[in-house]
Amino acid sequence: MGRNTRKRRTPLATKAIAASAALALGGGGLIWANFYASAHESNHQTWGGNQTKAATAQVATISCPDVGQKLTNVPGPARQGVATELANLDKQITEAYTRLASTRDTQAKDPSFVQNAIVGPLKEKRSATIDRIRIDIQRVGGSFDNALKQLAACTTQAANQTNAGGQQNNGGQQQNGGQQNNGGQQNGGQQQGNNGQQGNIGGQAGNGPVAADYVDITKVAPNVQGKPRRLRNASTGTFTTRCGVNANKNHNTDNVIVAPGVANGAHHLHDYTGNQKVNAFSSNQTFLQGGTSCQNRSDLSSYYWPVVRVQDGTQDFDQNADGGGKEGNVGKILTPVQAEIKYVGSPASKVVAMPQFLRIITGDAKTTTNGLANANAHWSCTGFENKVQLTEQYPICPQGSKVVRSFAFQSCWDGQNIDSANHRTHVAFADPASGVCPNGFRAIPQLTMRLVYNITPPTVQNGQLKNAFAVDGFPEQLHKPATDHDDFISVTKNGLANKIANCINRGQNCA
Image (cartoon, rainbow, N blue to C red; front, side, top):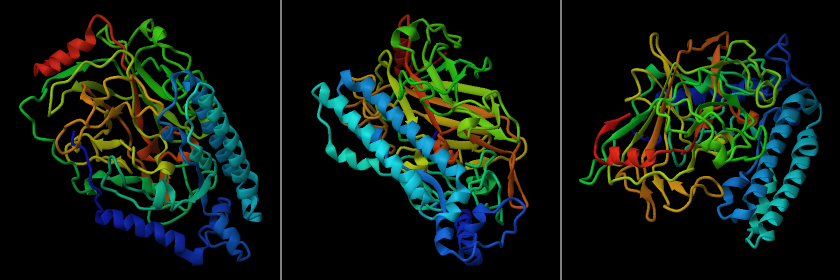
């Protein structure tokens, strides 16, 4: 699968931005006042001409600096305490967003409410939590960058400011840069607008997605670039492991990599294949005893990803649960009809075996507020995968075509660490042009995953998005497609890690 490294602005993208701008400017800016109108109120209703109130109505979500991404050097003895505090920061943001979404009428009447009752108190909580992180690190002799204290303050984002700047790319974007237009505003799931756009953040739970988050894939210009040229020492083999599609519905809302020991640390639901004993409280020893859904019983690795749901009015088993309906993840959970897990080689060198218990996260669950620097989402349709890959929009597939989400994990390892403080710096992507790993890194088998779904294409009727599908996520991230991500823990026995590497280095196709 080619990696997109350049941003394209297609005519379709320009039309989408223009439509969003028209919404924002329509009626002399009164579209923002409509944010508070109930379903029966006219789209032209005003609120006494109060410009401040109209401006307040633009608030779509809360944007907080990602403290965890800045913590690149946390001493081992402090890791658990710091992880717990980082999970507290996520919980605080989730709670603040819930308050933001449930007080829209109050915000309309009091333009200072968001700052005084939500953003201000959130800063105080975050300041205290960041200080506890400092204490955890310094207690074991580590150094703490006091500049991190400045990350306590959060801001609010308007619907046309999410993803750090309000630019949108219909043609798909991967890795390093790029920004997206959130495309609308929200009021408890009520939808307004024209030309397929919405005057709110939409969605069955009132926190996305919106019509602008979708594109007819047949109207997107090809954007997949060619693969690097293979060098003489390339490793050209593949190793496929068959682990099923989570038909047994092994789910939880934990994330043992990012938030070990914290229940509901992900704030969204995961599908699990491979290792069957993975939750917030699992350990390396637990993984070895976990059993596996993989046909190869020596593959105890954990492959997990956020579920996809269709928002058709259905309520699934977790409608009233944390990480589910209580946090804006609603609708019918869709099980993939196909899940392909394959390890591939490097076009530039041989690979070394993955170390036992290596953890890799690819993509970023918080791109709506973080921007796209770490985005690695790929959305497409069967029959289009070699031509079009989308990061910032979900595809609307033609009849007979299925939705595909795929991942290509980091394929370079620092040779020493199975994890890092921010869960990123111990692994890296190879150079997209040459396939060569950065200095100090060595090539490992690249994990690739391809998930295929039968999904009835969403439609826009009278300005309303019908039967939307979306990936689960943190509620304040508004179910944007760029937030898609995938998680992996390498656990093998009986020499399987070496067998995978040797197969790939010999140029064989193994399973």
